[in-house]
Image (tube, rainbow, N blue to C red; front, side):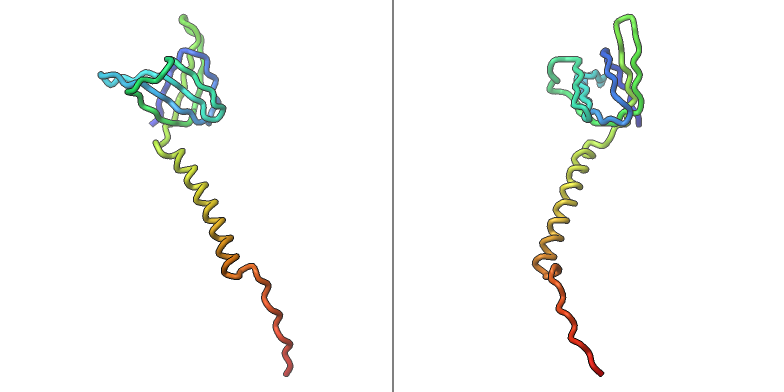
Amino acid sequence: MDRTIVIAVPAPIPHGHRIEVVERVDDTGSRSLVVLTDLETRVRYRQETSPPSESVTWTGRVLECTIAPTRGGVTTTLLVDPTGPGSAEADVALRSADAAADRASGEALRWGGGDRVPEPEPPRFW
């Protein structure tokens, strides 16, 4: 389910960029944005100086970005497709697993004799 985030600063984040959102959760269950980080460019937009201890962090991919002037200044509205909590770590794990499989395949060929040139076949006569 897509989520809409509104921040009170101009934050032009392009479509498709991954972002990390840190939100504060109140006792009533309402959420307010603390830090927004564009993971592609490493630019961080802060609403507060430090995240509180009762904060929630999640990642997502930007679907739309709208920057609009208001009476209080400029606001940015982002439509974000949240990704699972472990999807970024899963991508790193898969890349590491592929590299390990390539190394293991190379070792198996080396120890199993797969890199040897076969002996020439003796000439046949009838």
